[in-house]
Length: 293
Image (cartoon, rainbow, N blue to C red):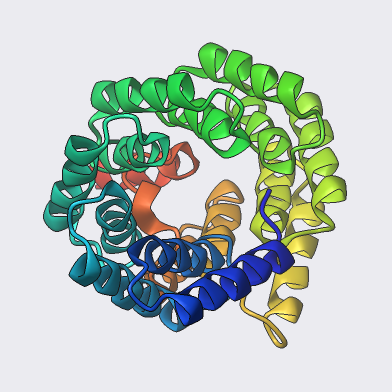
């Protein structure tokens, strides 16, 4: 898992590179990706970083539109924050036309396909990303997550376990494995994995909301409510995404609270890219499609 300190250090280096060569398009693209990552992992409020990431990606393209990286960077931002699905897909496709071996572009194109419910296309792209960069823990775990989102749970477990063979201490792999176990009713294993993820991540907010979700799915309702209280308390001093609290409320069966938090998540524009396919909201979808008489 990327840490905030690591991302801030990368920002410093990219800014130094731009200072030495203001025409260096790749540095602007790299800087754009750093700001996107700060938003994705909830290190900063989305509104504080994604618009800046878009500006930087567009600056990179103004300097050199014949390289893949700026197109991919712009596509990622347009997808994650601006919800401009058509333009995002075009930019990611352009990146792959320019460099078919750019694993990150395949990885983000897979996310784009999955967000729109194009499961087979997503899995094809993420397999290509793994083939091109088989040691990237981000890509390895995303391949597993896409299998989870596709409801291919046994395959997702196998992929997460392969990821952990590469790095046994990668928190996001344990987090994802916990989600799969919860979905198939292996609650003891789910609790064990999410608590491992929390310990490895230093109690990261990005993972803490999943702790509440897993507790709720495992029937540990009071523990889940305590996590919600912890998140509310943390929100007094730092950014806490609303999406995670929606997930916990949905698992607790609190539909109204879940919908309220989802509305707030939409206002924040944080982590909604998987909303259409996230199994955490399957119960809400069923209720919406089969309303009470």
